[in-house]
Length: 257
Image 1 (spheres, rainbow, N blue to C red):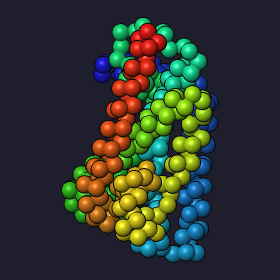
Image 2: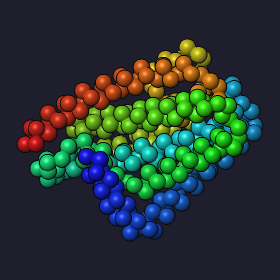
Image 3: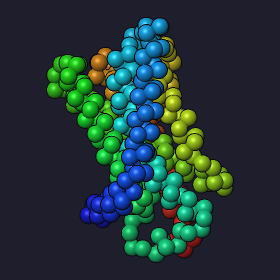
């Protein structure tokens, strides 16, 4: 399976790089939007000061992580949307006939490798900024930061799969990228504007809101308890996604797979 994924990545990368203009254009637009957003919030923070304890430096860290996170999840988003589009168009037969695990098609067949490369580059930029700013005080901090990053990305992937699945069973081919974009805007909300009790409730029920701020809260403010708390929504989303996946496989069998 791993060998197949790596070969597919190589093929996709060569295919995407053959359209260099599209790649460079998408990169330029992505960077322009994110730089504009950071500059806009720089102006807002210059007038408003901090939101609770949330400073512009915190927002900048969260934004770098959000950019990396969003690009990484978009790799899978695009793949899921493309695959489920084939289901709506009734072109699923050719995939069901191949002796390959169906998860490969759902998660990796249409994978955007160039987005993954950009996501990794931004994440390394984030790590460089963390060390350059002397935010890290010991090795355990950076280790917990990596753990929180993995948890945040996993929550994003599970949430995306659930949303795409619900679109499939709504019997309407909605453009889920539009809704996912608006959901992702919630990540810009400073977590410190909520009371402690409300924050915990939202963190468990709507964890997607705090995906970008979770690593910052753990790294800078030492809220290590959030890692244990994040396991609750992670397990809930995993359980829901697992049930949906089982039902989805049953649906595919009705197509003759």
